[in-house]
Image (cartoon, rainbow over all chains, first blue to last red; front, top):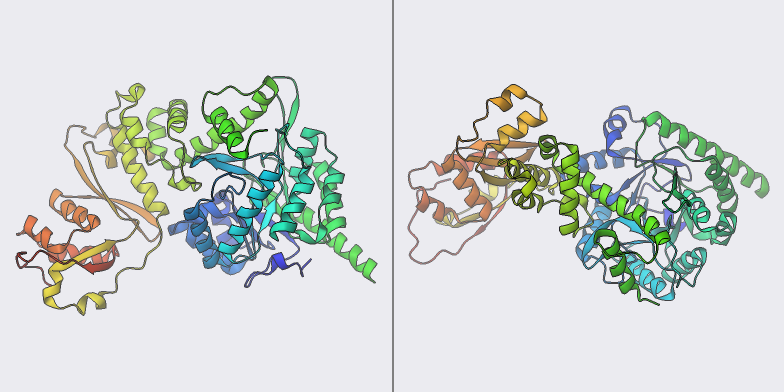
Length: 294
Length: 259
């Protein structure tokens, strides 16, 4: 999908290859060892200041294609976007010229207070209008298209009227944003709510998908006896998620794919091993596409 | 059907406040979000206040910061900005009242955290100062680097902070809590944060620089001090990034400051 417009940064486009989410414990290793990684993604909110963190980001940016993943814009908040935060993100985007910029289909802010989580939205026409408006404002401020990631959820709202896959498809069509397809999130949400993950994947507009996320999740038994899957990014990618990923590649073609860990972050070699596993599936899909084309 | 804003306000009250969720099934699922929010914010505070956590212990820190989070949730999605209110909260936190120096250690750690994450700024080009007319020098008011701040603390929080983080029991035992206030300058050099102790007069000068006071007021306060040398040190250390010329009242006295 190298022709996907979502991937065309000013320079350093993100290749349709396996990247790794870079977190603080691996900064030293990456700067010293310069491991063979196709691209890195970082959380934008961790690099809004100067000093050592910013120096690290500049050095990583000099050596690797970079993707910026925001966690704080709260695009689903009923009120206005935080103008100061959007300005700081825009400055970081200008300063680093990332190949991709992405955010979430969720909300975190109400009444000016930040709940440090990606909270679920009701799938309503009102919420769709709010998110569309905020995505358009963000794309105008950043002067580029962004990708929006499908959420992992544990709660559904009884007044939701739109299936999530239709909601995110409509968001992409109306706002012009791309889709960051988190395959683990689809698996987690489908499992938690009794949806069919394959139906979800098949419903997404293939041409809008500019990136895929892969991560681990946990199983937890709640007080009422029900079992939920929790998207905690603290374990290897599950076998079912790998097979769903293979289906995603067949549907979307070779797509930049990120290995994401945020809890119990393992040694870098384990991230490399998971990236290699994704890369192997990407290569076989590329070969299959090539064979079809021929 | 609740409007989006009403729904978000209700979830906020259920996650951070004491509002009861609609039913048991949603309560246990909402608890997942409450746990994530609290764990993320406690961890952010743990990263910014490591010495406070060592002093009080991990369990007490978690309990105290959960109370702080409920009363003062963050207003910025950048978690490096979260915690400015923790020192004042700890100063009034009854369960920690026997640790008289705890709030001062928290004040120092907050200043260190701010220095660590402050924006970058290029140091002042000295040629710009050299181009000034001699008569304008006393009207200078400086812009300090965003990472520079000054603290006057009742307890020797800098010595406690170092001893606690280095787990140096001998240094901790040697600290005299009654030794009087300490005057500190916090800054970032070559990407590491430095905490320097100053004498009262030098600290006063640095504090006035940080407040943006014009030079002539400093001369009035300390007519015998070698302000030129002190200013030169701040310039050489890159603590000054710019200047403006203050329009002084007509009767402002001449000064002894020279370039």
